[in-house]
Length: 271
Ligand SMILES: [Zn+2]
Image (cartoon, rainbow, N blue to C red; front, top):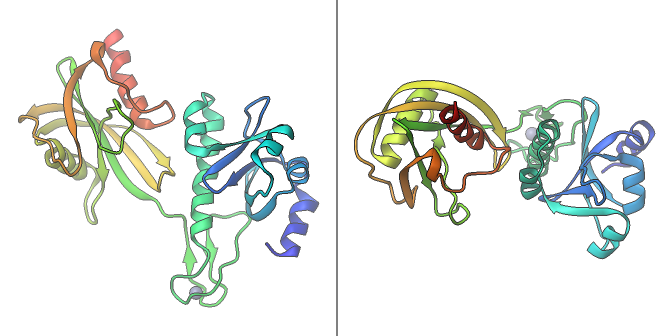
């Protein structure tokens, strides 16, 4: 980072609550497990090398490197944890939201260093999610890939499947990316037919979520089973079955919208 940028940062944001992203990891306070740390004190204690930063309302996002050994970091009162695992372990929705945003920014910022049109180095930005090439003026925005997921219900059962890359025993709702020129609704019908061989009806919007692993923007739906027998696409899934609320397998952790979708089924059954 340029000296002038570092100067701006140190002059204006010394006390600012900051999320520090180090590669795929997040820095947290060892005692409180909080990822929100004071900028000046933390950078000084750990001698962090700042790569770039972004001012997100009242929070600062910082991408940085650290040369201290793990033991020294712990002795200084901090810990470095894998960002995705840490995200899955926290229950505070507000902190989850801030962290999701910080990770998404950091992934985008670290990947977009050079203009894909003319090859010039792109400077980082402070207050907007837009990077502009200083040479050809081309604009870049964070990439979001729209995807859909659907909870399919058949009487008192739901259809869940698992991909080979899931953790052992974990099942989730069916999901897939939206094709070019396709609506979200058509994508849901197509994915379900392709992945599980069944047809659905009564499609109903549930909610949405930006998810930085990698860049998806997930639109979640609920639907009712219409017809067909499960016939899985082995390229996409290794298993798919009907489960009732009493015999549910392990499901994705709480920050993900797939978890909320499956929880909504369990809560409805309990009413
Ligand atoms: Zn350019």
